[in-house]
Image 1 (cartoon, rainbow, N blue to C red):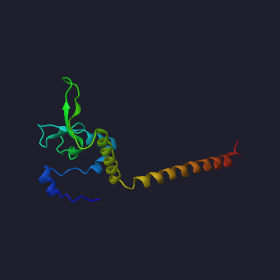
Image 2: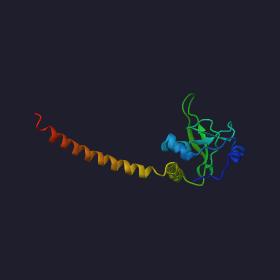
Image 3: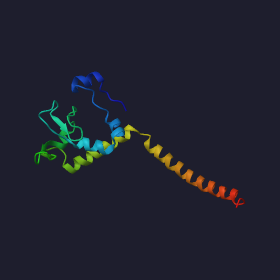
Image 4: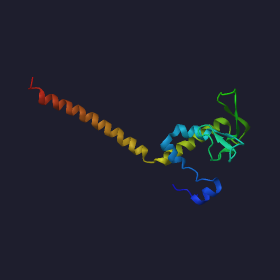
Length: 149
């Protein structure tokens, strides 16, 4: 799957070319990407107006803000980690938004490596073959070495 966004347009609209999140799912993992997609909050100090818990000072805007709503960071005490709370709800309820992001992350993970399922199936078959071959080799070894004692 290819994007219709050119590098020139990406730099003009966002300052940098937005990352390919399907490759991020491969390199950092699905769990990190899920946390990243759910970790956006309003930050007036940043260029885009958004910041992220998993990737501080991120330049990518929160493209799903209409679904999640306006999230803000509430700081509990000095030096303590903050907590993201919804200031204004979005189009989806929090549980629906979590499922939506999980589905999106699963799709991005699949698009990052569509042949993964085939590779895993072949790997399981190879492991079964090696286990059977090991038993045969062990029996053959016992047969060859039985007269040596």
